[in-house]
Length: 344
Ligand code: GLO
Ligand code: MG
Image (cartoon, rainbow, N blue to C red; front, side, top):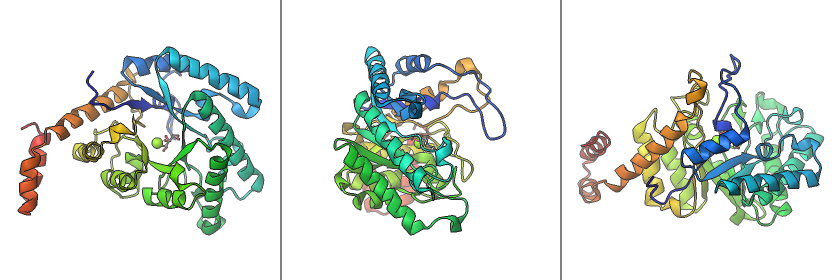
């Protein structure tokens, strides 16, 4: 498969059993090893890890057990010629993170969240990756008056600084999202993530991950969000997917809702040679109706769409585009792009 210099990743949670808030699972669980086989089958290069994807139930394990299990996971990856793209502390499922993690109103819970993040960094190091993704899932409120947003911002900064100090080789990519599970999140956009990073104790080690659906939920254009981070050399990962309007977070296959919006994400990644530094991460889920034995097609489709769009970006008539831009004939430019996407 020609991949034009790009490398691809997804997370084990992207092979999913189909539960939603209104109904139980509809597909049987697959073991981690079984999922790993799918990475190879579909031509992916890397695995995105939650800390407990690599070391299940890590809260109940000793430091030595955690290290040993993370090492065993690294070996498993090596056997399949895969690498770990990043590790992300899962700070939204446990009983100690109900009111948020770094911004919980309970100091014991905040301490737990920071400690867990340090252990996640240790796991990342054993897996051979130097990138931690922080999806700040429950850092926000259902009830605005329940937290102090200024204090919460400082708590987020303290958490970032604690992780940077714990592991001097780890970089952090903040994954902003405006809502869900919270009503209102504290770090909703690239701009918020980057501002937090710039205030940290080591700004050179804090960047962002842009997820398509999250940008759309914030009412923003994903290609512009990508570009904003790229302008400062801060786009360290992406979660490409798609999203049909301002609804629940859908994680639909990349390009399946709005092909032109997907095209523009690929265009800005291409124009800025993102493939030289970062991976194309997907964060996509099969829709609930998909039968179990064929529930990885969303991954195949997203990867294929990305590559087809790379071809379309590379075959754009750049000379003609420049002429139309110079003539301010943006209607003709519109037609050029639409025709190109329609294959003529
Ligand atoms: C949910 C997020 C989630 C994260 C993942 C990595 O909306 O996109 O899937 O990307 O947990 O931290
Ligand atoms: Mg994501």
